[in-house]
Length: 291
Image (cartoon, rainbow, N blue to C red; front, side, top):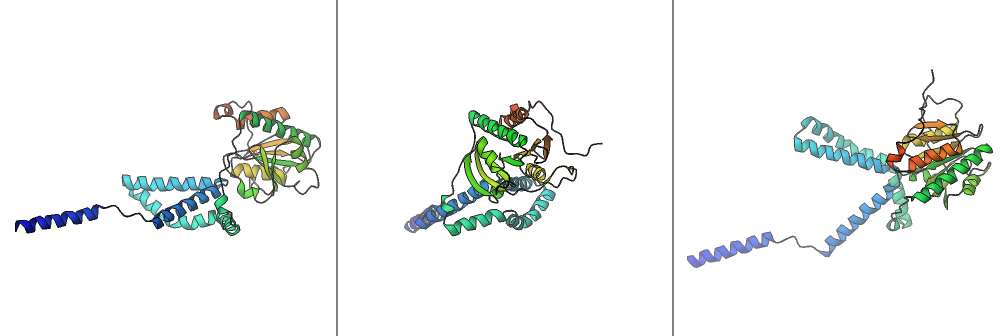
């Protein structure tokens, strides 16, 4: 009997040992993980240069709020977020439609796996050179009464709008900016989008502002500059073709009648650190009806 008991104990121990063994990792499992990692990486690279980054951030906030509501047993908030989760997948298909289309196009061209990370952070000297060239070009265009719209990309990517124009990818210079907006040129009526210290594209189409308080004296170029400033954190430099007035749009606001030096000071304050931005020497006028 004792021997039988010992045998039984050995059998149980052996069974427990089998159950405690970790799940065997196969080569196909490693391949599976690698494929998923590449797909997630490419998806992040595709949305990195677009406004979809903010949408992903907002989605992450909702997921975090749902997790907190479950942990704290906030049943009403959990109920609302739970039903919202049923609608989010459909909303994502609509919101990410441009990114999904671009991903499928790159997949068809076989270029998905070569998408990489390209930083465009400027150093102090490069930022000063960019501001000087942009302000000087705006002054020359203003003197000649040549309409222009230059957009400086900041944290929010503008890839969706870049794709509507003609790819340039050239270093910013005064001569280049003037030639882009020369009258009757193919890119005269569109916007030139600047990323870092390079003109990425010209002749780009921008969304028009729906601000009903904009005066009738402001044309399509000003509405487009204000529109991109409303939808993104980009900075738009607008030169009026009729009056030669230089305007600057930012955060849904516009200041008009800037000189070259004032434009330089404004751009430098926007490209500098957050502490320097608070020291702007003038106020921004909102486009509200005057009484």
